[in-house]
Length: 245
Image 1 (cartoon, rainbow, N blue to C red):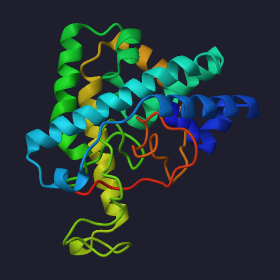
Image 2: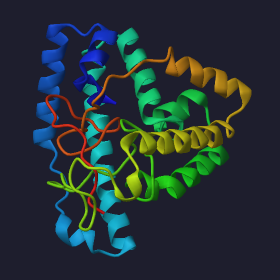
Image 3: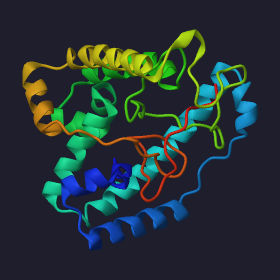
């Protein structure tokens, strides 16, 4: 959520002042220096078993969540209530309904039951393989990706045997077709997630999301190495990079 403040259009929507921007950046630097990420050999991870990969991604996700929680507590003392409310709504729009409804803050706000939370978590677990970029996956933020797993450091190029950098993938598929597939998958994912809610909860969730916002491209990276939406980063980024699968 905090990572969204990297985007100029988001800062403009929230009317972030220069003083607030400075304070958020300083808070991000302080938290980043105080919490060290888990160490991974990403080259070895590429050839690891699914269980080992899942465990590694879980550790990294938990690290991101701890950073995000710490930053959000600091952010509450920098932004006013209206700015925090709109930021949460923009974040829910960016990461997608399934990821947003699995977030603790949203679950509490909607008073989700244990059964609803379990159902949503199962849906999320089932869709995580697509969120890591394989088989036409879609993710929940930016491209859109974002709920969870960071790409390996330095994974800027295509996988071995893949298309040349900047060129279309095999079969003539272009970026527009991939975006269409991701958009359709995201739509189906949202329908399944929203079907878990009661009508009252759907209304409350729509209020949380607020007015639809036209996010600018390209999307930010989350906190140093992470992806859109879910990451706690703030400050200059180098853009999204796909994971080396």
